[in-house]
Length: 408
Image (cartoon, rainbow, N blue to C red; front, side, top):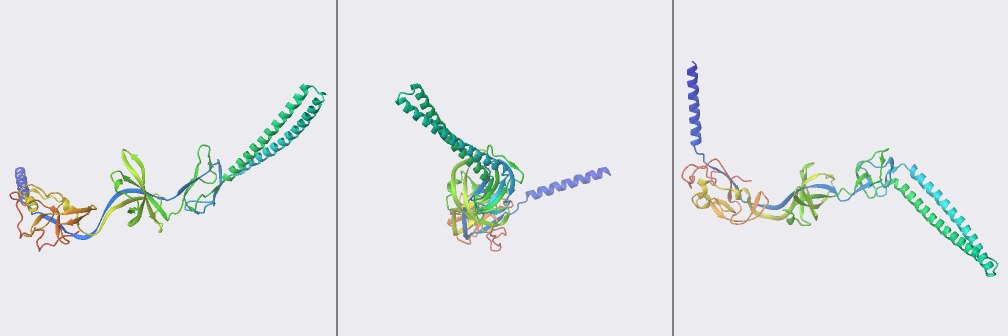
């Protein structure tokens, strides 16, 4: 019984091997994918990615240290220029102002005291001069009176300078008190609020950022990183289209506003920032969105075009003569499309190609609208000698009247 099973399994295996060999030995007729030359628009673009941002964005900070006592704006709040958006605890600043004022009063009093002392020293010096003229006062007393008067005048000037210093200190204290009230520098909308009530901000080394305010979100721009290989084709005022993931069915339009000369090097890749002006009247676009950008560098409207795949088609060895007019494995020359010849078979035709957008190629000459071109090949080549052709009446003839032409 066991031997019969082994013999049966061996027989089945031989049958399978024979079937596979038979199938491999068969030749499938090639099936050509074709398309018609049509008329349409072709656009050459430079593709890149960028980030949406507001035209004007201001970081609102604090020049003084203190504790946040009150907030007048939150996320998405619309503010006007000069509106108060935050207040710091003012008691410490008010105390400094009061101290500076008292120092100013004391300095002014010192000026008055020194002025009186200078006046007294002046009178004594004048009296000593009169007595010395009558030889009633020794010369040493006269010199002492003159020195006392000069010292009093210098002391008066020093006290006047101290008054100026006290006034400057008072002004500084008043400025710090004013800076405890944070105002919006522009009209706009609050994008970020980085503090809460009760939080202490320290401005000893740098001004901490309390708010980020964007100006008018109806006017935005896309900051695009263009590769150095493509930047030579980008010019100001060129049309731009882009998409964002948040609105996959919408295509947004803009114009190139500026091409910055500063190179950005990231992992040995050089790019140049290009700014694209965008109208955002519907407020669909938000700062920070990633945009897939296409910069329109050239455009042709209403031209005869063929699918770009037709220019990349290369016939297999057995069909090379069918397309090139030469026998053997030679393939078509570059910029050569394939259309029906006089006998209804595909024949090589030299044409001039123009602009390409990756999907379509502009036909400058050589083909007419409605003529067929081959864009691909499916199946294996018909068996036979190199250069063998399919039968003109065969159903696999892509240009047979019985076969409907496929278009894109």
